[in-house]
Image (cartoon, rainbow over all chains, first blue to last red; front, side, top):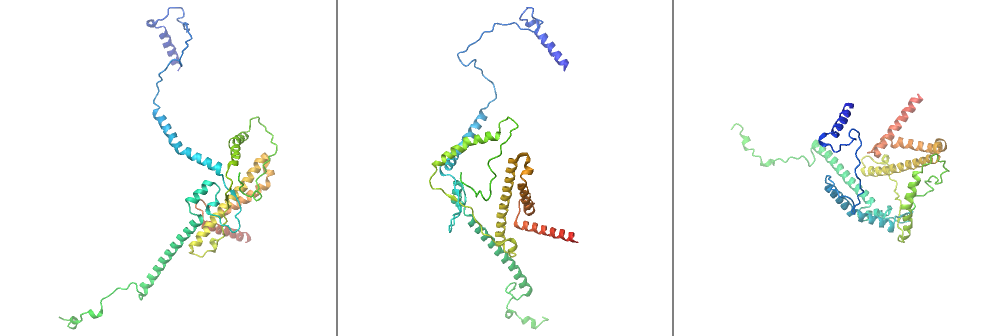
Length: 186
Length: 171
């Protein structure tokens, strides 16, 4: 490490003292000072020297961000405006005791006006959902019971054999031709 | 702001806090944020309340009838099972909210009293301990798929353990 820095200083020294590139012949060769050149304050009438800054393209990134903001705000701003105006001008509902003999509609159990609107327009009342579920359960229970009964009856019919199931139809007795049986050794 | 619940039934902790002795000279960030919120949101909203439409709509708390519980259902009566299950779920939610209210009280008490909370909020501590023990013993490790049946079985195990403990302690 130390050797590297020594080497580096030696290289810089030799570069400065290069005879092919001797710019000045004055006495400040071996020292590290630099000759003071004339420095003039430059005043531009424009924004300074125009630079062509070379950097990798940011076209795609900027296009992506622009499109992202555009599509988000396309729906975002109307929705935000709608929600703001609903909150300001319509406002939330107040809690009240249920009056005597009055059955509130199912959307009247919610506070925010937009929730109430959604419950009123799109959703079924929770009571109706409950009843629907109970109806489904009842139907499935009846089906299960029927299936159990059918298995039980099947078992009985097979065992006892006196029911309408598992009856195998045989030919009528009168159709049997007994005539070959009268002479067995034919 | 519209009123939410009856404040006498679930009293909120007192809003006046005792005089605080600040040890540090840094500004209180909670105060800064609350002032910010007040001036940016609260004030405009309260001034806009005046422009709201005259007729106010109301919302109500739904009242549910009590239905027979799981223990009172006939075996194989699946509709009864469903109703009992729904009732148990509603009761579970109510119990969760009760625990939250007690927790909130304890938290407020601790915030008010500061370092000496274990002495000054003794009542709230005892209440919270009792409530959370009861909740844990009833609904404790039922998990995400908790149901009325599992809770009933847990109760059965509890009663069995109690009887076992009673039997072993008496002999």
